Image (cartoon, rainbow over all chains, first blue to last red; front, side, top):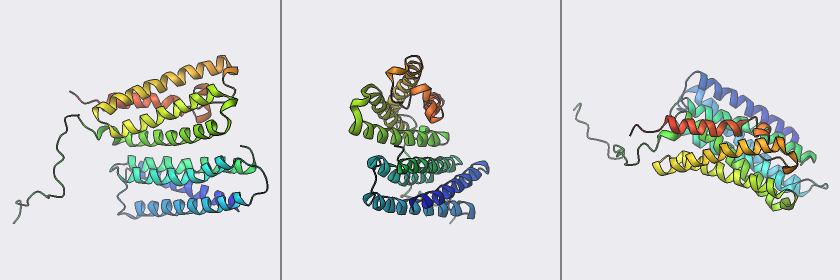
Length: 126
Length: 151
């Protein structure tokens, strides 16, 4: 269950990162009043909600797990992307130049990296 | 009545502060730099906390270095974001310590690998993190120099 969701969330994160980079290249600030910026905001909010759902499912599955994995690290990688993406979103919104979208790109790119580590910890390679 | 609009009281002119331009370090490319610093601060702090809490005895030197790196990243993130004259000085120190750390630990980890049985963020000049730990302090110092006020 958690593996499938992580793959979907990684794809969405990479898609949002590419969208952010497009805004950087087009030199568009995150004004949230154009279709391009609102579409990106929708993607990032959807990603954040997905990460929260994943964190809840992950913790429930961890409690019912019948093998040994590094629980603390696992929870860390469940909550890490939730925190990082939210901070990146707020930090990017306050910037009124193309660099705002670049912050969002970095925030989105960090998500699949953390989800890969999450998967590795889930498989038992702590 | 055109041209006689009174100044909007909710948006007063920002009064110039004595400590130069507080926004300079966190706008433009600085915002991206601080974001990357922030991610490293969170990652290093979380990683170090888990290492020290669960298996400190296995590699105390490496784990203490991880903790030091975490503190430096947090300090650099916060002081770069604040950007006042005093905090710029701390940011400069943090970047300098960071650059020294990644160079020294990078060199030692290659020359005497047995000292670092567990990799730190600075091992191999930060190769495990795409050399970002090596590039970050350089960019930080360059950015501090770039945003230095003329006075």
